Image (cartoon, rainbow, N blue to C red; front, side, top):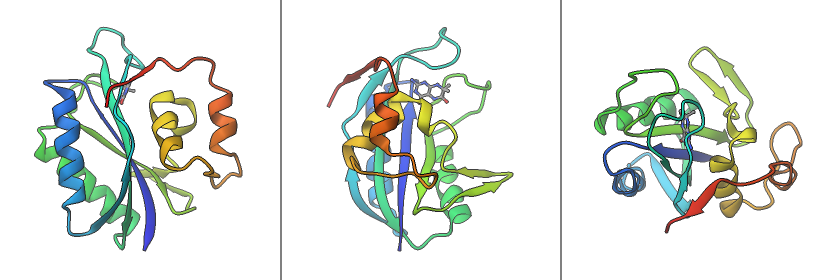
Length: 159
Ligand code: ROI
């Protein structure tokens, strides 16, 4: 089974409830075995500032799905929650990003793993470090070194 980390984010129509429900949907999915879920955090929008604050979390699973089948599964769940891609880097009902799939490096038109935002987004690194404090990325960098290089965390733990 592959070890995978999924980032969850939402900033429209009660994002905390959306994220809690999305975690349940993932945990109950027959192709995923739930391992752990991080705390939930409120974060300032990265990108355009004229949108609501986000709620973010990271969840860890084991799965036999291939990376692309896992991506399809995540996109199906996003659709189920009414995800609309209205504008690039704009607000979203639910965003599910595959951060890591074992130590695989994947560069395909539909899928880049590790997720390119992972190393620069505090709202991903902080919850990921909660679950995997000793994690080393495929390129050899440690999550601790990445966290230390972030100047301030504009994050508030909410649950
Ligand atoms: N900003 C925050 N704080 N959290 C997100 O999940 C998030 N997702 C995005 C963009 C628009 C880049 N900004 C975000 O896709």
